[in-house]
Length: 316
Image (cartoon, rainbow, N blue to C red; front, side, top):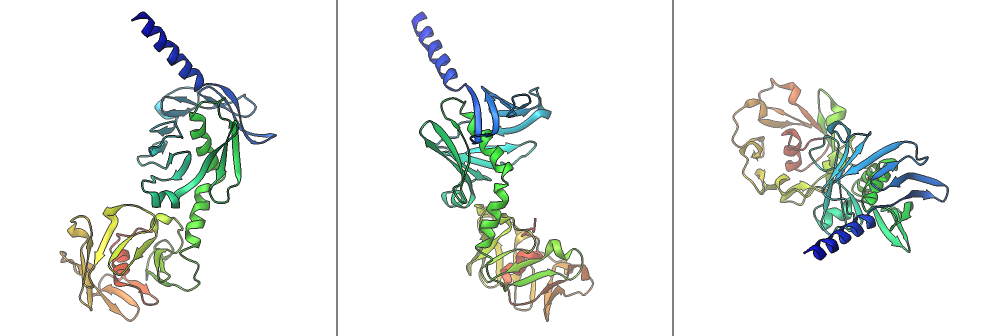
C-alpha cells in the first residue's frame, strides 16, 4: 500500500511539473504578448501581474475574489476533443468556445457553426505552439509548447482575439458574402428610431441595415424561416402561405396569419396588432396607432414582414 501511494505521489508530481513552467509568449523575435510563470501571467517586463489561474478561473488583480474574475472556462485544455466554453466576467452565456486547438466565437456546437465561427487555430511546429488567424493564416503569437502550462493557450487565444479584434473581422467576412449585392429592399418604421430598426433584404438574407452582427441574419427557403449563423431550433419558424408559427415548439404568442389582406396574431384580438397594406405602408387597420406603421420600399416575403413587425427578429 505504501509503495502504491509513493508511486501515485510521484505521478501527481510529474503531472504538475509537466503543466508548469515559465517563459515568454512571443509575437515576434523582439516583441512579447506576456511572460508566464506557472499559473501567473505577467506583463512582458515581468513587473505587473496581469492574471493568475485557479482551477478553471482566470483572475485579474492579486486576489481570487468574485470581483476579480476575468474569465471562466469549462476546461483549460485547449487540445480537448470536447467543446469547451469560455465565459467573460458576469456573462451568463459563453462568449467563446474551443476544441481541438481551435478557438471559436460563441458556442460553436455543430460542425457547420464551427466552420463559420472559427477565429484562430493552433499548430504544433517543432517545439513551438503557433497561433494563426483563421482569416488569412497570419502568425499572431507563439511559445515553447513544453515550457508553459496548457492553460497558457486558452488565455493566449482569448487575448489575441481581443487584441486583434478578430470577432469584428469575422463579422466582416460573414456579412460580405451574403450582402455583396448593391440593391436591396428595406423595411423600417415610419416614426421613431428608424436607424436602429431598419432591416434590409437582398433577395436571400434579411438583416438589420446598420448592425453587422451575424446572429441577426435570417433566411427563408419558401417554408422555413431561421437564423443563418445561429444553431437554435427554437428560433425556426414555418410558413405554409397563410400561417406563420414556431417549427419545433408551441407558442401561441408567436403564431401569425395572413389572408391576403390582413396580417395579425392568430390568437390575438388587439386591433393594434392587426395590420393591412396601404401602398408601401403596413399599419394597424384601426388607424389609431401611427407609431406602429412600417414602410416597405419593395417586394419582401410575408414571413419576413411578420418576423420584423412582430418583434421576433431583433436588430441588436
